[in-house]
Length: 106
View 1: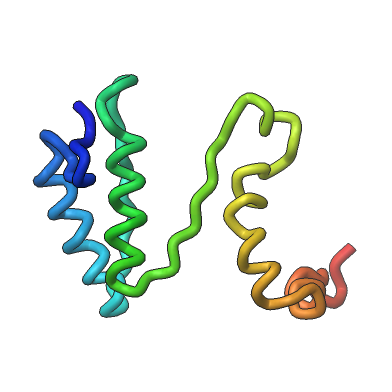
View 2 (view 1 turned 135 degrees about the horizontal axis):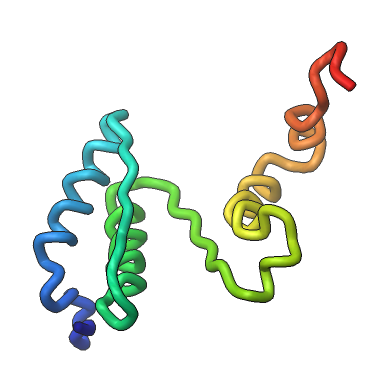
């Protein structure tokens, strides 16, 4: 499986249609969780790239991260990758306010 020059997913048209439907539903406030599974070389990464493009087209904020073996020593490395753009956007003061421990904890 692969992509043609125009970016159309080959043999994943139904999956791409489903992602487009779910993206439209998310814009309307009906979010969901999608799990993409498959063997190596079946086009999971291409499908996820297409999903990001579909989401961006309908106005969703798309965040991307990629886990690698180099991430393993870092606690929540992929989560940090995902949240880094939001931290930059909202600023460090707001991040500190959000990350304070509740009163009485410790």
